[in-house]
Image (cartoon, rainbow, N blue to C red; front, side, top):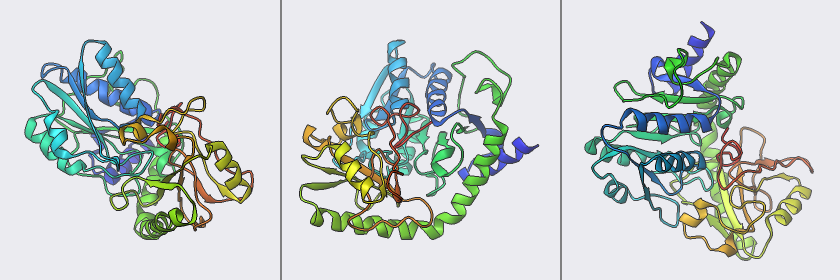
Length: 355
């Protein structure tokens, strides 16, 4: 009964039916089960999988597995703001395409994708669309037109270790894992019931607060985007200045090492993080920055800041962070470091941890 109530709450907030929603152990698992299960279920259409160049690493790893098993993959490029062109996306929907995937918003730079437009094009081509909504669920409205939807509870303030996979009625899906009777046969093992309940409560609270918080956070980030480049030499703000998440800021500082940047901001009292845009052992840009055309010089000092809830003041001279999450102002030593592969999730989170 408690699990059913949690499922109903999550479904209502995500615009789904309760029997379309299952709980997973992470956003990573939701993405990978969603991709592989939809490809498996639609294999009679063909074996082509299309995704944008800036999808989360969990999607890219699933694509690699699909390709290694004999499938084909089409990658849609993005512009320098990290946004896909719907017409370019449509060009990749060739005959034999079994699934397309597009994130609602990018986990590193916050750019919001034209999901509704792409969904219409996918529907016209008869191709199901998986929307990775982990970065936006709970903060903004879920875009219309999805066939499969994934999300991660800790992104809206819920517990880590709870993900969501929703599959619309009528969409062909077959689990790539051995059969299990639980969670509609899509996710094996017992559901984390306390985690699912907490995720549902947190999602409802996040949606109720979003109307009040989003304008304030959007204004704070807009101020940072406008004033930081004037205050700091060789600083570049990344991502779309308008079509973006309200709470996320990502910037690069040329000739500045990311660890040095983190240390100085930490001592100034700002909780920041770094690691999503560069691995710890190389100056190679993440796949997201590379797809946006970033050069190697931008990578060492890439940082991002996320505003979360009340009490986090973001003002020029203070917010930064890395990998897509951070937490405004905090006491010295309180910064969070999210070590993960380029934009990875669960050993790579979606901008600060997907799992």
